[in-house]
Amino acid sequence: MRRQGTVKASYVCKGIKVVNCPMTIKDSAGGGNYQTIAAAQSAGAVTVNIGLFINTVISFTIVAFCVFLLVKGMNKLRQTPTPAPVNTKECHYCFTTIPLKAVKCPNCVSELK
Ligand SMILES: [Zn+2]
Image 1 (cartoon, protein in one colour):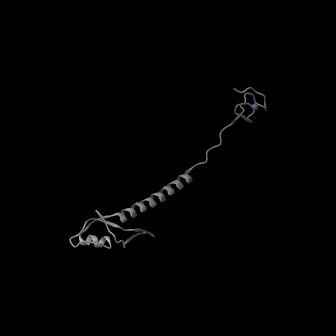
Image 2 (cartoon, helix red, strand yellow):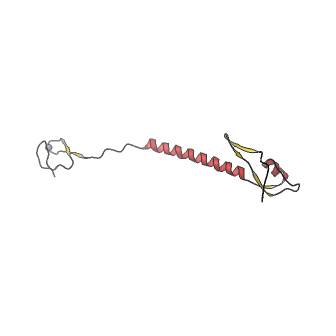
Image 3 (spheres, helix red, strand yellow):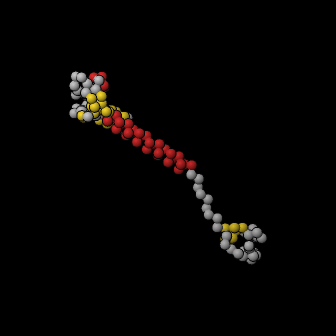
């Protein structure tokens, strides 16, 4: 496996250019110093398109991060406010609000169970 020396072609993905550097596994019959992947493939050389692979990985990472942010935003919108903790109760006799731990109503002085 030999790496091509000249790298001219670049793959464009929405403004991000990743150098397309094919690695030649097997040269064609005429020998090869290919400028592009298309030239190498038309000449019959077998190449490993590392530039395309890196570009695909970067594109996948960008899309996955965007989907992550989208899902995170959707979850933030769906959150309902948690109700305040209940620390009061109503007296059964005078129907006023008293602390939850009270055993005797401060308003009507009745025993609470
Ligand atoms: Zn009471």
